[in-house]
Image 1: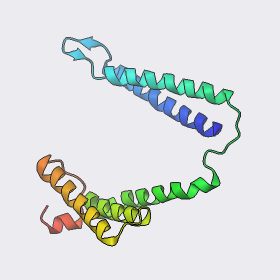
Image 2: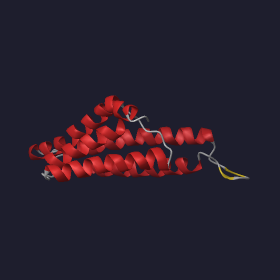
Image 3: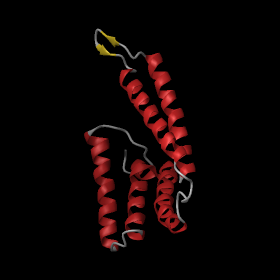
Amino acid sequence: MRKADLVTAIVLLILAAVVVWDSYELGIGWGPGGPGSGFFPFWMGLIMIGCCLGIIGQARRRPDGKPFIPRKGIAPVLKVLVPAVGFVVLMQFVGLYVSAAVYLAVYMRWIGRHSWSTVAGVALGFAVIAFFVFETWFLVPMPKGPVESWLGY
């Protein structure tokens, strides 16, 4: 567990340092119109650096004993990871709404063990509602696939 804490903290520390650097170049001062565009990210990056340094300090004092993920914990992690990766890959071919429906259906049936009627109702209902909210209400174009093209969108 100690190695995982150290690696994660170091990666996040590097990311926070990049945020601080870029924010500084954007301008972190206070101008006549209020704070500069880098003001908020700069301070959030500094707070993140402080937290990462605290995690590194704690992890260095703790003995390394337990594994990050015990053997029994790998299967539940993969049950979440595999559908999520499938969702991202599928979205490239069929768009956001169809892949979201498939993702929900797979997850509800595989993990939740819900009935097929519940799975179909929730998955299709969510995709249709999300489509109308984003495409017609908010007017935010999302990745579309052949089904949306077939429907004229």
